Image (cartoon, rainbow, N blue to C red):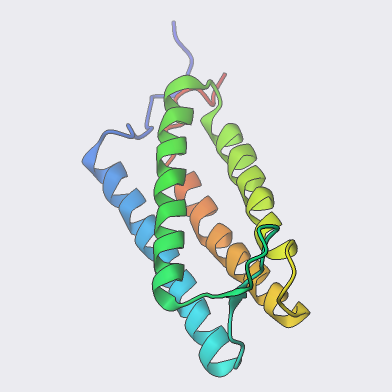
Length: 150
Protein backbone atom coordinates (compact mmCIF):
# COMPACT_ATOMS: atom_id res chain seq x y z
CA UNK A 1 0.00 0.00 0.00
CA UNK A 2 1.32 3.43 -0.92
CA UNK A 3 1.51 5.60 2.20
CA UNK A 4 2.46 8.79 0.41
CA UNK A 5 0.02 11.68 0.55
CA UNK A 6 -2.17 12.33 -2.43
CA UNK A 7 -0.44 14.42 -5.08
CA UNK A 8 -1.84 17.91 -4.68
CA UNK A 9 0.88 19.58 -6.69
CA UNK A 10 0.50 21.86 -9.65
CA UNK A 11 1.66 21.08 -13.14
CA UNK A 12 3.72 23.95 -14.62
CA UNK A 13 1.88 23.50 -17.90
CA UNK A 14 -1.52 24.02 -16.26
CA UNK A 15 -3.18 27.33 -17.08
CA UNK A 16 -3.52 28.17 -13.36
CA UNK A 17 0.25 27.84 -12.85
CA UNK A 18 0.98 29.94 -15.94
CA UNK A 19 -1.40 32.65 -14.74
CA UNK A 20 0.22 32.70 -11.30
CA UNK A 21 3.66 33.01 -12.87
CA UNK A 22 2.49 35.74 -15.21
CA UNK A 23 1.14 37.62 -12.18
CA UNK A 24 4.52 37.17 -10.49
CA UNK A 25 6.24 38.68 -13.54
CA UNK A 26 3.82 41.61 -13.56
CA UNK A 27 4.27 42.16 -9.81
CA UNK A 28 8.05 42.08 -10.20
CA UNK A 29 8.05 44.59 -13.04
CA UNK A 30 5.60 46.82 -11.15
CA UNK A 31 7.76 46.70 -8.01
CA UNK A 32 10.90 47.58 -9.98
CA UNK A 33 9.18 50.47 -11.73
CA UNK A 34 7.67 51.74 -8.46
CA UNK A 35 11.08 51.58 -6.80
CA UNK A 36 12.65 53.51 -9.70
CA UNK A 37 9.93 56.17 -9.42
CA UNK A 38 10.52 56.51 -5.67
CA UNK A 39 14.30 56.60 -6.03
CA UNK A 40 14.25 59.13 -8.86
CA UNK A 41 11.21 61.15 -7.79
CA UNK A 42 11.20 61.25 -4.02
CA UNK A 43 14.81 60.28 -3.46
CA UNK A 44 16.16 62.72 -6.01
CA UNK A 45 18.77 60.23 -7.21
CA UNK A 46 19.52 60.25 -10.93
CA UNK A 47 20.08 56.53 -11.37
CA UNK A 48 23.02 55.66 -13.57
CA UNK A 49 24.70 52.44 -14.56
CA UNK A 50 28.43 52.42 -13.85
CA UNK A 51 30.95 52.71 -16.63
CA UNK A 52 32.87 49.61 -17.57
CA UNK A 53 36.30 48.84 -18.92
CA UNK A 54 35.58 49.86 -22.51
CA UNK A 55 36.14 53.49 -21.58
CA UNK A 56 32.45 54.44 -21.67
CA UNK A 57 30.90 56.78 -19.14
CA UNK A 58 28.06 56.09 -16.73
CA UNK A 59 24.69 55.83 -18.47
CA UNK A 60 21.36 57.12 -17.28
CA UNK A 61 18.83 54.46 -16.23
CA UNK A 62 15.34 55.45 -17.28
CA UNK A 63 11.97 53.88 -16.50
CA UNK A 64 11.86 52.03 -19.84
CA UNK A 65 15.23 50.46 -19.06
CA UNK A 66 14.02 49.33 -15.64
CA UNK A 67 10.84 47.93 -17.16
CA UNK A 68 12.71 46.07 -19.90
CA UNK A 69 15.42 44.73 -17.60
CA UNK A 70 13.05 43.53 -14.87
CA UNK A 71 10.77 41.96 -17.49
CA UNK A 72 13.69 40.19 -19.16
CA UNK A 73 15.04 38.94 -15.82
CA UNK A 74 11.59 37.71 -14.78
CA UNK A 75 11.00 35.86 -18.02
CA UNK A 76 14.47 34.32 -17.85
CA UNK A 77 13.66 33.20 -14.31
CA UNK A 78 10.40 31.65 -15.54
CA UNK A 79 12.29 29.74 -18.22
CA UNK A 80 14.92 28.58 -15.73
CA UNK A 81 12.22 27.49 -13.29
CA UNK A 82 10.51 25.45 -16.00
CA UNK A 83 13.77 23.68 -16.78
CA UNK A 84 14.46 23.09 -13.09
CA UNK A 85 11.04 21.53 -12.61
CA UNK A 86 11.48 19.33 -15.63
CA UNK A 87 15.01 18.07 -14.96
CA UNK A 88 15.65 18.11 -11.22
CA UNK A 89 14.38 16.01 -8.34
CA UNK A 90 14.11 18.91 -5.88
CA UNK A 91 12.87 21.91 -7.83
CA UNK A 92 12.24 24.12 -4.82
CA UNK A 93 15.79 23.70 -3.55
CA UNK A 94 17.32 24.25 -6.99
CA UNK A 95 15.12 27.28 -7.68
CA UNK A 96 16.33 29.00 -4.54
CA UNK A 97 19.96 28.12 -5.23
CA UNK A 98 19.78 29.33 -8.83
CA UNK A 99 17.77 32.46 -8.07
CA UNK A 100 19.98 33.58 -5.18
CA UNK A 101 23.06 32.82 -7.28
CA UNK A 102 21.65 34.91 -10.13
CA UNK A 103 20.99 37.72 -7.65
CA UNK A 104 24.60 37.70 -6.50
CA UNK A 105 25.85 37.69 -10.08
CA UNK A 106 23.52 40.57 -10.95
CA UNK A 107 24.90 42.61 -8.07
CA UNK A 108 28.27 42.59 -9.81
CA UNK A 109 26.98 45.25 -12.20
CA UNK A 110 26.13 47.93 -9.65
CA UNK A 111 29.03 47.00 -7.40
CA UNK A 112 31.67 47.37 -10.09
CA UNK A 113 32.63 50.01 -12.57
CA UNK A 114 33.55 53.64 -12.05
CA UNK A 115 31.53 56.75 -12.70
CA UNK A 116 28.80 56.63 -10.05
CA UNK A 117 28.72 57.69 -6.42
CA UNK A 118 28.01 55.43 -3.45
CA UNK A 119 24.41 56.62 -3.11
CA UNK A 120 23.70 55.68 -6.71
CA UNK A 121 25.43 52.35 -6.23
CA UNK A 122 23.35 51.63 -3.10
CA UNK A 123 20.12 52.49 -4.91
CA UNK A 124 21.00 50.15 -7.77
CA UNK A 125 21.68 47.35 -5.28
CA UNK A 126 18.34 48.13 -3.62
CA UNK A 127 16.59 47.89 -6.99
CA UNK A 128 18.13 44.46 -7.61
CA UNK A 129 17.14 43.30 -4.12
CA UNK A 130 13.55 44.47 -4.63
CA UNK A 131 13.24 42.50 -7.85
CA UNK A 132 14.62 39.39 -6.13
CA UNK A 133 12.43 39.87 -3.05
CA UNK A 134 9.32 39.83 -5.21
CA UNK A 135 10.22 37.29 -7.89
CA UNK A 136 11.93 34.54 -5.90
CA UNK A 137 9.17 33.84 -3.37
CA UNK A 138 6.32 34.30 -5.86
CA UNK A 139 7.83 31.80 -8.26
CA UNK A 140 8.72 29.50 -5.36
CA UNK A 141 5.04 29.24 -4.44
CA UNK A 142 4.17 28.04 -7.95
CA UNK A 143 6.70 25.21 -8.04
CA UNK A 144 5.58 21.70 -8.82
CA UNK A 145 6.71 19.82 -5.74
CA UNK A 146 5.97 16.28 -6.91
CA UNK A 147 9.55 15.18 -6.20
CA UNK A 148 10.01 17.11 -2.97
CA UNK A 149 8.58 14.30 -0.85
CA UNK A 150 11.49 11.95 -1.51
